[in-house]
Image (cartoon, rainbow, N blue to C red; front, side, top):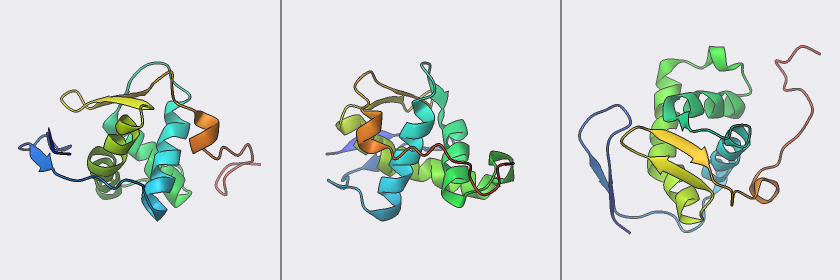
Length: 125
């Protein structure tokens, strides 16, 4: 599948010519983190905001501790790898021009997301 997406940083459009049929390792975990965050909202979330929360979950740190470089790398991975896969399976909608993403009604959170109710290591107990 070939699609053109604008760069997450606002640069020229880039062409994505392939997408993994099944995500592996960190991509799969990143998709679960993204769906977990999106499941809390009924309205679209900006890609940069989503990237900050996903990076915080991946690093097990507070969102305030995520630096700009890590946020940008996570946004790029979401934009080019994770969101196209989640769009293909019908669980998110993403507008690459506005960089807004939202979970669809079809998002089977329980199937894709391993949500735990316990505190993360940095949460006050």
